[in-house]
Length: 248
Image (cartoon, rainbow, N blue to C red; front, side):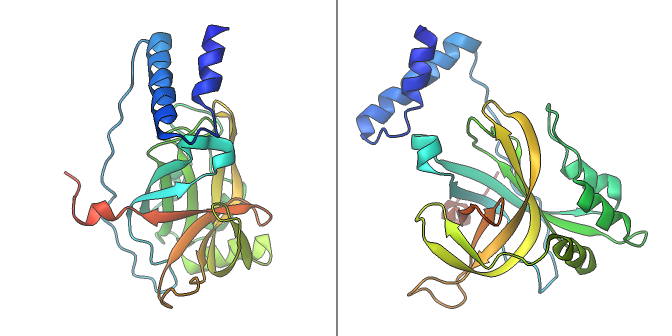
């Protein structure tokens, strides 16, 4: 009963007072240490050095991004960090490896991607954007892939788009709850899971580029990932500290 008590209080979504948040976080960490006997640490690596020469691809700079995954669900832990990078696959097996989950079931390349990539000529490469969680939550923890987006070849991407039907044109911003117009979208898959990363699965989704907001320059790029055309999108922002504090 005592363990359940600190769990519920430490994960209080509506705690806003800074002093209370500090106390709750400290209690949670001490509770985890008492329960597991350790605090695991993880290396935050730099993104893979790869640039895609494709004018139809999103101009999304590789690196660390932060997204608001929702105060209603995650409270003080709603801001999560993702490592976003471009990945290239020369074979179908290399592409399949991107969809495998470390230490967990529920992986495997979705059948629709398998089909479009298997139809490519021998030797033709496929390219993806991969968003991996650096910090996670009680649904999808750190180290797991949050989303994978198929960028190329264009022929495979177009076939995947056609199989899904008309791409989304409007999406709800999860942070502001405003309806925003979508300028461009690319088909992908996002991870869904029950609490404790139970039953993880790949669900259809889109990487979306939003229209500039009022007052923003026309070239301003804002990106997000939406899991379903009827759901909202997590909008991600590039961590500017990377421009002055490079990776080791």
